Length: 104
Image 1 (spheres, rainbow, N blue to C red):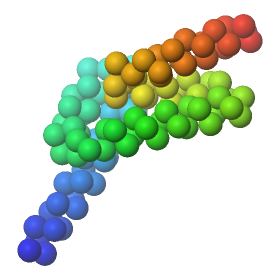
Image 2 (cartoon, rainbow, N blue to C red):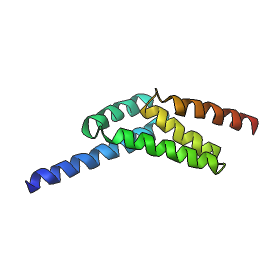
Image 3 (tube, helix red, strand yellow):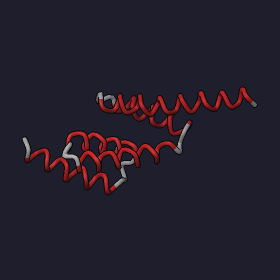
Image 4 (cartoon, one colour):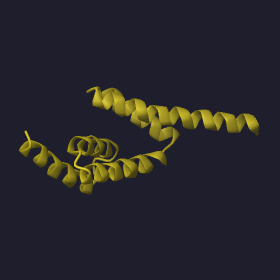
C-alpha cells in the first residue's frame, strides 16, 4: 500500500513537471515538443488541466486589472494552449493585443 502511494505521488509530480515543461517549450517556440509533453501530462494527471486553465485565466484577469497587459497576454496564451476552444480567453486576448498595439 505504501509503495503504491509513493508511486502515485511520483507519477503526479512527473505529470505536473510535464505541464511546466510543456509551457516552457511552448514559449520557446517548440510547439511540437510542447504538445507531446502536454499529451503525456494529460494521461498522467488529466484533472490538472482544468485547474491550470482556470488559474491562468484568473491570473490574466488580475493582471489586466492591474494594468499589466503583457503579463495578462502571457497567461491567456497559456489558457489557449491548454484549451484552444476557450472563447472568453480568445476574446480577452484580442482586446489585450489591441491595447498593446495602441501602446506601441
